[in-house]
Amino acid sequence: MKVSARNIFKGRVDALKNGAVNSEVRIALPGGDALVAIITLASVQSLELAVGKEVIALVKAPWVMLMTEHADIRLSARNCLTGTVKAIELGAVNAEVTLSLAGGTQIAAVVTREAVAELGLKPGVTATAVIKASNIILGVPA
Image (tube, rainbow, N blue to C red; front, side, top):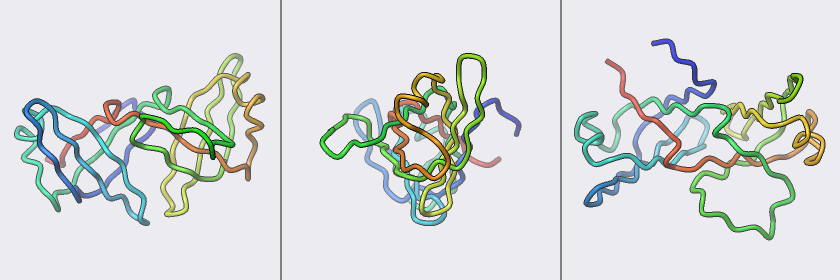
């Protein structure tokens, strides 16, 4: 499968909470990291999701927000994953920032060059990737 999403995570469902319309799916990633996705109950049924099932989570890089110095901030976003800036590729307007999480997972984010400067992002700096659970697309191997 080839997709345009920069972030392709392989993991296993380790928790599943079904609601009347939507379901919360927690995905355990290699190295101890985890993602939470919100998808429709119909999608859970169509994908035949269950605890232990292998899944693929897709997140487009522009859907990933970055923050630093967040000790006093509380967010509604379910996925706040702290890591270290591994690389920054600057473009004319935007930049692609790659974070490495403690468990080895890497996350790519596309943010403005202005944001890179304002946040003081450079290799080695600690930053947090913020991803809304509704911005995660799930798939299963065929």
